[in-house]
Structures are given as structure tokens and as C-alpha cells.
Amino acid sequence: MKKFGYLFPFILPTLWIWGYYQGGTWNYATVLFAFGIIPILDALIGVDKQNFPKEMEKKVSEEWYYKGVLYVWALVQVSLLFWACYVISLNNLTFSEYIGFLLSAMTVLGGIGITVAHELGHKNNRFEQLLAKIILDTVFYRHFFIEHNRGHHVNVATPLDPATARKNQSFYKFWWQSVWGGIRSAWRLETQRLQKKGKKAWSIENEMWNCLFEPLFLMIFLVALFSIWQGYFAWQVGAFFLVQSVLSFSLLEAVNYIEHYGITRRLLANGKYERVEHLHSWNASHLLSNFFLFQLQRHSDHHAYASRRYQILRHFDESPQLPAGYPTMVLLALVPPLWFAVMNKRLESWEKNVYEAQNV
Image 1 (cartoon, rainbow, N blue to C red):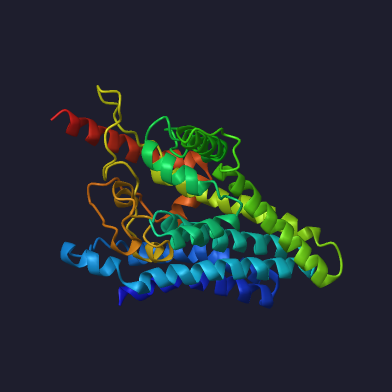
Image 2: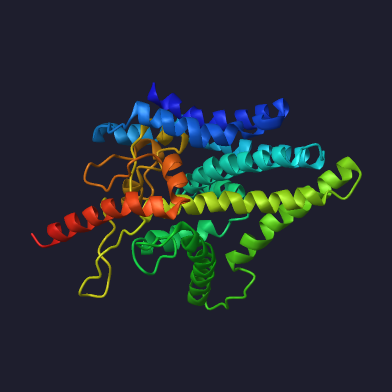
């Protein structure tokens, strides 16, 4: 019956819509549930260390139910963006309501939406990759598909990876490193791909043009659509699209920050870094938040086997463990002194254990 837990993410868009029509402070219901109620329930319910038996993994990974949940979310993501733009075009939100509405958009379109795009983008199925790109277009972060798959997963836990936070680096410094470093990395990866084909970086085949123009055209279309619908130039729709995008991918970067903070791989004598193992990502096997995040918190297994589907990702006791699920850790990351006080001790313990293991 645990499979039905992966329907829990749909609670958040329901709260977003309900909160809007209730009005006032109810516009904050989604973000308060995600970053208030879920952390409390996470602490009460605790962790789930159960893994599927190996003989069941293939069968479970092929069940259409798990794919179907993600496919439905992709449709929901696009529908919610159109609905949100319609709401913004009505110009009936107070400033306080608008802030709550934006934070709800961030939580739903960024927190859940980008998680779904991440899961779909790792699959070899072109349809699933297309859905991932569409979702990323809705938050103006399409280059993530390039950099994450071909950059981050190769260079994670090394100085070459902009999405790996360094020890004692605050989230705010990391944000600049990861956002701009990720764009540069994606451009470089596309340049290298085209050079192998004998083509120049500025070629029309450079996927980075799609990363720029697809979300841009989507934004222009939404502005035009609701301008015609409402009978005035709905510039607010474009502003909303941009602001919710920045908030959404910033939430993604907060997750990147907590997933890999301070973790490093050894540089071997041959000049290459050691293979990515289950020791090279922070993990949280808290049952409830893993339902909402499609087991993204079992992150080490994802990095060791990137194509493994979310429902069969495994818990490993030897992987470095976070003290709480991602919703709690994101809040902690926003306050650097608290983050360092909690995480540096755990990081130093991880460093000591790895050092001792390497010298046995």
C-alpha cells in the first residue's frame, strides 16, 4: 500500500488552489504545510530503511503506476502555470496574498515540479525526457537537463562541479556558484558536443538556444494570451513568470546545497576521481518527505545508479545521513550559522570515517 504515498504531492497544488479561493492568509497554506507540517510529521513518523528485495526490483521498476504518477504531474504542472497566470491577470490579490501565492508557486512548481523533471530527465525514454524539458521550461531552468545529466553526475563531489557546495560555504554564496556555474557548464558541454561533430558553438543545433527561447516564448505566449483575454496589456503575467521561476530554481539550488555539502571524492594517482559511491551524497530516508519528493532523499543510490527509478531507490546505513528531511534542512540552510553548527560536525565525522576506511 506504500505505493499510494506517491500521490501525496498532489496535496500541495490542492492547497494552493484552495488557499487562493479562501483568500487572505490562506494563500500561505501550501508553504506552511510543506515547511511546517511536513517537518513535524517527518520527526514523528521517522525514517524508512526498507528496500525492495533484489528479485522484486525489476518488476516494481516496470510498473506503469509509478510512471503514470509522474506523467499526470507533468500535465498538472502546465495546467497550474496557466491557472496561476490567469489568477495574476485578474489583479485581485493584495500584496500579502501575492507573496503567499508566489511562495505557493515556488513550493509546487519548483519543489515538486523540478523533482519530477529531475526523475524523468534521467530516463532514456524520449517521451519522459520531453516531459522533463517541458516542466523545466515552466520555471525557466531548461539548461538543468543538460548540466545535471552530463555535468553534475560526472563531476559531483569534485571542484569541477558547480552544484557541489564547499565546506563552510553559505547557501547564498553557493547560489551564485551553482546558478551561473551551471549555465556556463551547460554551454561548455554543448560546445564540446558540437565540436565533436565538427560544428561551432553558435550553431543552431546548440541546445542552449532551446533552453533560452522555449521558456521565453512560453512567457510571451502567456502574456499575449491573458492580455487578449482580459483586454489590457497583462505585463503582470510576465513578471509573475519570471519571479516564480527564480524562486523555483532557487529552491532547487537549496536542495543541491544540502545534498552534497562538503562531500568530496579522492583524486587518484591516474588523475581521475574515484568512482561515485554511496558515501558521496547526504541522505534522508524520512518516510513522509520521501513520498512528497519521490525518494529524491535517497540520493546516494541515485548518484551511483542514475537510471534507477525512484520507487526502487535504496537506503544504505553507511551513506552519510542528514538529521532531518529536506524541508527541514532547506530552512536550516537559509540560516548559515545554524547550518554550520549542525552540519560541520557531521561532515567532519564523515571525513574521519572515510579517511580511516581509506587507510585500513
